[in-house]
Length: 183
Image 1 (cartoon, one colour):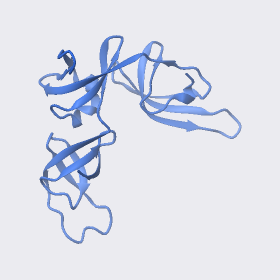
Image 2 (cartoon, rainbow, N blue to C red):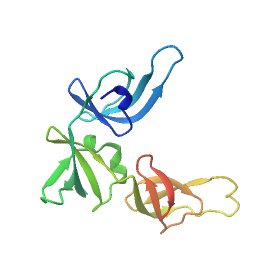
Image 3 (cartoon, rainbow, N blue to C red):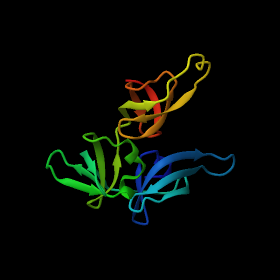
Image 4 (cartoon, rainbow, N blue to C red):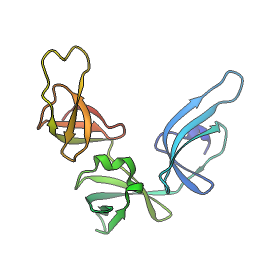
């Protein structure tokens, strides 16, 4: 594949190492050729790097197997279960990464395997949570988009609109961690 084909969520190999594209930017200059800038996470080490390629550069696509799994619990590591074979998969916090904030017990996720080893998880794009704590909203604060802090039922803290109250179920975008709507 070409570097021009790199998009958010694509996994590619560079020097035999797998990278997940987190952010992608195509830059076209007036006289020169186009460039592709990506923010990519090394799937084995968790390191985030910014890389730049010519748009015509050849890239090697990574053979990554995606399997469904169910999140069970966290002790020192995160434990997932394959719903077909009931095998348990243990991953440390480096592999789970920032996705750990929105993990809920019993929730389905996709586990990505590279050369037989789990290297990353992928949450559903939107998830529903219940607000367990937030300050009350005040009338008159609705002139513009005003947000306040809230704690969700899994312990995560996010910003919600002032009309949200304790006990409300809300929909969250897991990629950015932002409020979408009431559920």
